[in-house]
Image (tube, rainbow, N blue to C red; front, side):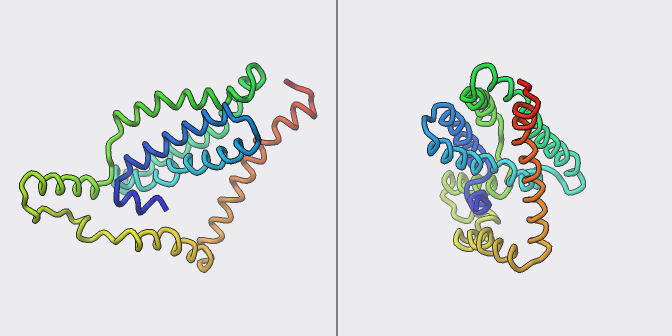
Length: 211
């Protein structure tokens, strides 16, 4: 659903807005007082946190030629997986010494300087949005409505874009075997990954009585 909004407002707004909400969810988790709050914020955390994952392909498409994308995409995938594996290591020490709330709080506080860096130094990567803004500025400065970007002439409407990114995507998932089984495999792979992470404490704390 975010793809159509990237067409309208660009990737910068989506990245900054999503990361801001992502950071606030960590602060809320650290201060949450009941299980309902924790469950709701964890759900929102996943929704906002997935923005970087689902938009990174399009962002690299904006920034690199097809023959130059392999290394940046590989580095991103490596860092993403490294974070998934490495986070429980430091989180275990934090939880053991100062409590689980600080696991969330430290991540929330650490996101603040990163958010500042993104706001100040991240630039819009979608060329069509940049050209549209330039055309709008020229129309405003010159009063000449002939300044129009290609994006404004050819981009589909919001309704059509939402249909293509939601209804059509679900339709492909249900009718295209390749899409269905690839999605099933990805879901299974992530399920196994997080299952392993979740049983670490059970295996070593309860089974081996380690700290």
